[in-house]
Image (cartoon, rainbow, N blue to C red; front, top):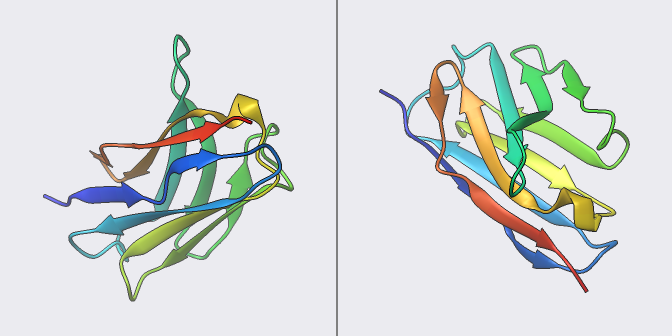
Length: 111
């Protein structure tokens, strides 16, 4: 059983940046695909970004060119750098790997 713990969320003004981290209690090296999802109030959970073991990345169209996902297998951590944040990015952000989910971290973009 691997625990995923997200951190780095908070309140930021539009145009600002945040860096989310997802720390795993065990090795993520065997988890081929690591992902970030988000869920806004009243909406379904949506895929934001993925990174493979070979560091190939994919992004939702809504965050392309603003968000960057990365992984550090040595630190068992996945990151999501979020730049030029918009109010519509407000959501709880979740880390996912293999069959494991984190508890989520709240990101609020508001002036």
